[in-house]
Image (cartoon, rainbow, N blue to C red):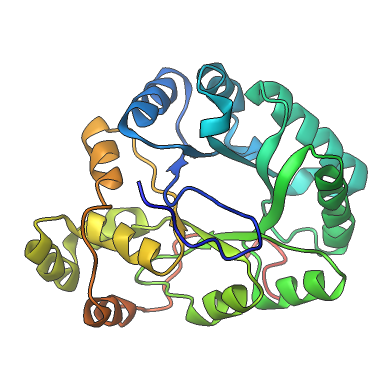
Length: 270
């Protein structure tokens, strides 16, 4: 498995992750075990997913120095002390001594972002987490955090061919902030795309595999999730071909600024 180019000073995130949102109990445990056997080493969790106990029951048997584990604090636990408490709950449920990456899940509520980032920074200084970052942050939110002196290392956002956030990606690249992508295959919509089908046929791959490869070549870590073993294997089989520059442009041009996840409830825009 190749390693994507780290865009921060020392954030070396495996190039593809297994997303665990909406996976629960035995199906989740099975997917985690199968994923590790296939070669996945990057596992994405969050307190909001309400499955960290099951994730912990499985990954505790994986060699700790071989896996990269992310979790996130939900918006109802924002604030300095609340973030610290949320972190300890996640850590206990995951049965880990520390996290590789800990994120603020949403820029909400806005008035507690800086206080929450202070907690993340302190967790890093105490070696409780290796890296910290955010999720669903816009350029405005990131600028505020950077201006306040925080070293954001990752921003996890919705990113797929129909929501190609080039301006955000350029900003993050400039500031050495790694982008990780949820909904990377637009919840399966890419499977029927004629452009992606044409490119996929050339490489004897699927449109999904081409889309994940597109992310990786852009320096983005995709977080596909699935409850099907065949798709789990397919999602990982993206390291034996390279898209041409022209094909990367073709996929970039599929952008429609089309969001799947509703942001309206949070302080997403301000």
